[in-house]
Image: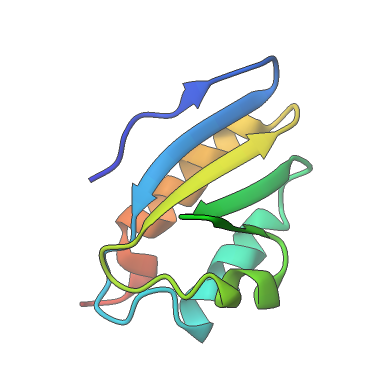
Length: 100
């Protein structure tokens, strides 16, 4: 379940997503997320509770320790922020391409 992306200030898009796959944001899923984010020029931050990470950093993403059911807020800033957040939502909602 996701909330729709909300544009904030000019060029800033924020959306809260729920990790749905059984294994959570494990190494392979984190790598897929980082690879996707690297395709965009926008700066992308992931927020989980009081922790945040650069979504283009595998170590930062892994440090969020997002298990199944964890809520992640994606904040993208830049000209391609909207398509970026939509792509991230598709990846997470699609369980990172995993069967479970």
